[in-house]
Length: 256
Image (cartoon, rainbow, N blue to C red):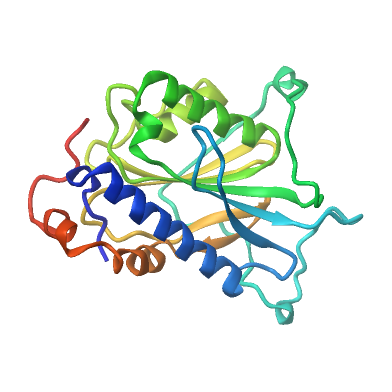
C-alpha cells in the first residue's frame, strides 16, 4: 500500500490511525519477530516523545540481556553483517562531555530495562519551535543513553525542520548538515546507539510503498520492522469519510 498524504485530514484522524499503527507494530513484534527475551509495549508517555512511543524492553540479567543466536528459540533476529537496506548511512562519534551528563530517569519498578524506542512523528511534534526542539532533545538523549531508535516521519519538512526530522536530530548529534532530497521529503530513520552512533536513513514520499526498517537490539544486531504490512493493517480502520481525501489524486507532500 502506498503512503498517503496525511496533511489532507484532521489531526484527530491522524491520531486515530497513529494509535492503530502503533498497535499493529506491537502485535507484529510480540507475535514472533522479537527474540523470546524481548517484548514491545506502547507507553503512554506525556510529552514530546509521546503519548504513543513503542518501547522495546528485556528483563535485566547478569549477562546484560544478550541476544541468543539460537534460531530454534524463536524471533526473527537479523545480525547486521550486511548493512540494512536503506539508501543512506551516517556515523558520528559522541562528545565525551555529553556522556558524562547526569539525568534523572524514572524507571518502572519491575527492573525491566529499555533497549529501543520506536516513534511515529505527529504534527504536534512540529507544531512549535519548542515542541520540535524538545522532541529532538529527547531523541538525542535517548541515543546518548544507549537506547536504539526508529523514527517514522510521514509529514514533509516545514519552516522549523527544513531538512526533515533526521536533519534536525543528526545536526544535534554530529554537527553535520543533512540535505533532505526534495523529491523524497518524508523520512524513515533507524539509529544504532553504539559507538559511534550510526543512522540508516530512507527518504521516501507519498505514493511510495513503505520498506521494512531495522530496529536495533544491540549496536550490530537488529530486526526488520514490517512497516508496510502494519500500515496496511492499520489503514483498514480509517473511516470512509476520511479515505476519500487520502486517496484522491493530487499534489503530494506540499511543504508546510
